[in-house]
Length: 265
Image (cartoon, rainbow, N blue to C red):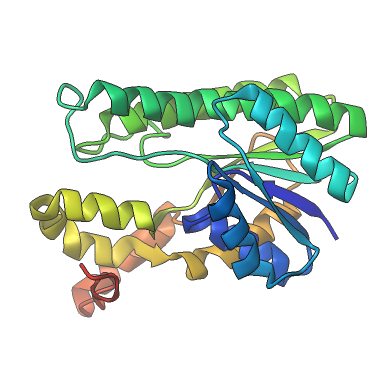
């Protein structure tokens, strides 16, 4: 039985991962900026189980990250896996049109928050003798360009470099560092962005129906690979090129089901 901490896990893929880890018998620490939201998430997942605890944490504040680490180790003794999932994607503006406050929030949450967590967790894992750290990547992390994702993609591209560097620096410390690319998942954030940029979403809807997946489809695959991960610096990718190609070819033969209607889109 492993102990897993997941930042930004009160909703979306973070919550989906937490649920799957719990379903497989592991101990989970869920976290978000709001304690009430974290409490609700823990209750949704564990139904009162003592294997799930909730800790509020704003990852842009290093002191709060340290408190999250301490709460997890106080309760469960050690942290085996830490997943840096907390992040924000705003994808409805060009770079020049993105409001300054949104730029600041994306850069500090996606970059600074992850760096804070990695520093705190790596030091803690050195003391306990090892562990696994995973950073959640996304669109832009491989250098590809997507309209409206100039700022968000830049933060994820930066995280790819950061994760490569961290994996090399920790290679002799029994700490495995990995990347997670969950693919195109229908989350609360995706729904929000679609509603905010409706016309462009409608243009992309057919393509999205081919490549997008639900959280509950992707989470079991990611959890299995996270638990089995044994080579630092590597990437766990759900939507690989082969899978994308097969789906696109298949869509030419059979129209894909609309996956967004049930979400009110």
